[in-house]
Length: 101
Image (cartoon, rainbow, N blue to C red; front, top):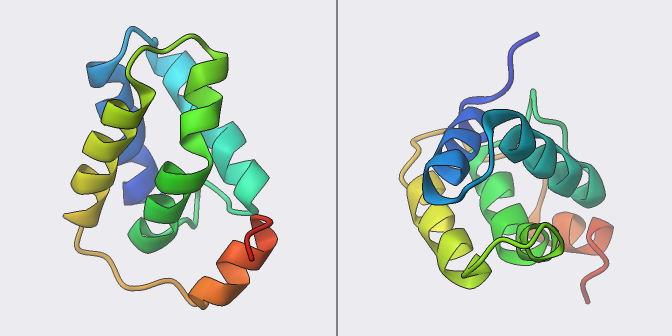
């Protein structure tokens, strides 16, 4: 089964913006999605945006990626431009799964 457009876009952009290989970028994004309770096949642009803001920066720091905040901001701008239907999850439910208040 194919991954969502948001997943593919973020992975290819992450590879372009960092020294991560395609496999490393995809694995890192998958781990961030898993931590947030999402699946790469179904994640919407809106859900991915939240993962980029709250989870991915820590994953990138743990892999020694430089300028993680700048990279994640650029990725968030890119994914915000994806015209995709909003996910079925309310923001409150997403943040609760991610351990937010």
